[in-house]
Image (cartoon, rainbow, N blue to C red; front, side, top):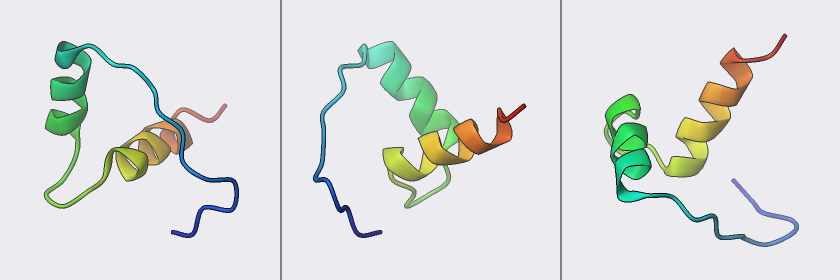
Length: 43
């Protein structure tokens, strides 16, 4: 996925990071996991 505006950094606790990893599938990036979760949250 090309990034037009660059990359940013967000801070997460280790617990939150582990929860994201548990939701993710093998080989998925945190970016992909978060985008999938956000798209399922649309109203």
